[in-house]
Amino acid sequence: MYKPNFQLIMIFQNTIIDWYHKNKRDLPWRNTTDPYKVWISEIILQQTKVSQGLPYYNRFILEFPTITDLANAKEDQVLKLWQGLGYYSRARNLHYTARLIRDKYHSIFPSDYNSIKALKGVGDYTSAAISSFCFKLPYAVLDGNVYRLLSRYFGIDAPIDTSTGKKKFMEISQELICVKEPDIYNQAIMEFGSLQCRPKNPNCAKCILKSTCYSYETELVSLLPIKSKLSKIVDKYFNFIIFISGSHTFIHKRKNGIWKSLYQFPLIEGEFSFDELKSQSEWRDLINNKEINLKYSSSTITHKLTHQRIHAIFHHVEIEDLYSKEYMRVDLSELQNYPTPRLIEKYIQGLDH
Image 1: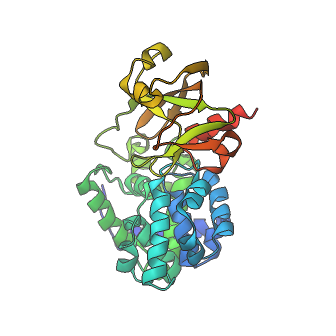
Image 2: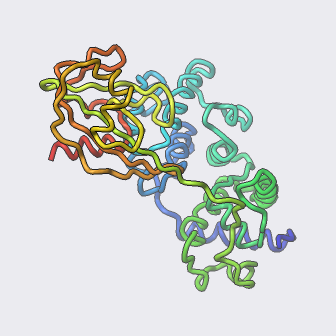
C-alpha cells in the first residue's frame, strides 16, 4: 500500500531518470521543445502504439510544418492524412484547435497550463505533457503506462477507471514529480512503463526497481492495476452498397458518429441476406423503383474497434443512376482520394489487386 516517504520518492525518481537516459528510444518529438510538434505527437499517440503513430507524425509534420499550415488546411486533407489511425474526433479537434490558435493566439501556442488545458481535445494528460516537455512546468503526466507502473510499484489498489481512483492517482503522481526536471521525469516514467513494466509478462526479475517494488515483493504484479468493470463489446452488422453506374459509384460524408466527416458508401444496418436487404425501407428509399443487378457480395469482413465489432458485407450493385441529393457521384478511380474509415479503405485497396 502506498505510504509516501522522502527516501522512497527519491529512489524512484533517480532510478527511472537514470534508466531513461540509458534506454530511451530516439523519437523525433523528443528532440524538440516546439509545443506544436509535441502536441501533434501526443494527439496521434492517444490510443496508438508508437510504432503505428510514428509514420503518421512524420507525414503530418511534412504536410503541415507549422500550426498555421494545419489551420489553413481543408478538413478533408486532415482526415485523409489521419486515415487508418481511428478515433477520428482527434483529427477534427486537432484541426479546430489549430484554427483557434491561429485566430486567438496569432499562431503562437499558449505557454501556461490552464490555457493549454482549455484547448479542445486537450485533457489533463496532454496539457501536462506539453507544459512539462516544452515549458518545464511541474505537472505530472498520467497515462496507461504511468497508472500501471505506480499501481504496481507502490501497491495502489484504487480502480483506475473510477473518478475516485483517478483522483487518487493524480494526487500521487503530482507528489512524485521531479520539480527540477519535470520534462525528463515525465518522459522517463512513461517510457519505463511502456518498455519495462509492460501490461503482460513484464521482466520483473531484471527490473531495477524490484528491490523496492511492492507488487514484486507481494507477488501481485499480475493483479495490478485494478479496473472496476470490463468494457462490453457490441456486435454490429453493416451492409455497404457499392452502386456501380458505368465507371462511377456513390458516396456521402457522414454527419455524426465515430466516423463523422468521413466518406462511405450507402449503408443499411442489420444482419440480412441480400434478398432480405431488398425488403428494407432504407433499400426502397435508395433504389426508388430503379432496376438493379447484383454483381456480387463480398464475404463478411470483421472490423474490431475498442467497444464495437463490426461485421460488414459489401454488395456490388449495378444501377443506371441513384438520383439522390444525399450521395455524390464519383469516379471509381478517384475513391482513394477521399478520407474513408479504415474498414472501407482496406476494402477499396483490395479491389485494386
